[in-house]
Structure formats: C-alpha cells, structure tokens
Length: 122
Picture 1 (tube, helix red, strand yellow):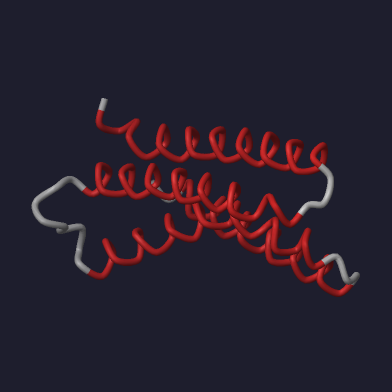
Picture 2: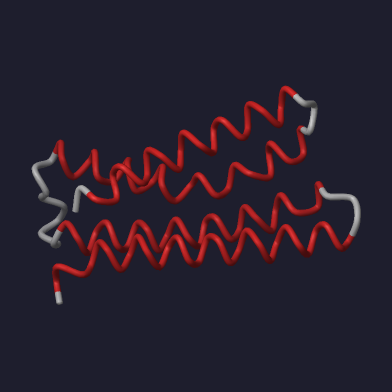
C-alpha cells in the first residue's frame, strides 16, 4: 500500500514544477491545462491521510475499497476538468490533442492506482 504514496508525491511535485515553469514562461493556458492530472494523486494522498487519522475505519468498509472508490471518483473528476479546460486552446487540433492525451494519461494512471490498491483483496 505504501507503494503509491511515493508515486503520488512524485507526480504532484513534477506537476507543480511544470505549472511553475510554464507560468513563468507566460504559457498560462498550458499551466492551467496541466492541473487536472494532479487531481488523482492529490485525492489519493488526501484519502490515505484521512484513513490514517481514522485508523482505517471508514463506515465499516475496507480501507482498500474506500481508496479505490476515491481513485475512481478522481478519474471521473479529472475527465470533467479536462473537458472544461480544453476550450482554453485556440485551435481545434490542439484542443483534441489535449483532450486525447490527457484522457489516456488519466485512464492509465487511474487504472494503475486502482489495481495497486485493490490487488491485496484478490
């Protein structure tokens, strides 16, 4: 279970560095466009922190199931944010490329998070 903590922190740090670099280069649309992919690792860390503080008790449900559900909810939220942020790109080609690449990245990352979280249950 600790495996995804390091990855979550690394993804958040790299994402924040990208946002800072793009914002300093005055590419504000791209800086804002990167933020949706940081939702999944951030929510994963938040729910892990909540479960740590509550000693793993969350309405009588196994902690892995709660984390898996929150990760799935984060994937859906990220998808909605990607679609909301895509009009910031002027050309249709850039907008479609942004939507496709970010969606594929989010689905693959979500699958990895959920698989690694629920694997001990099976």
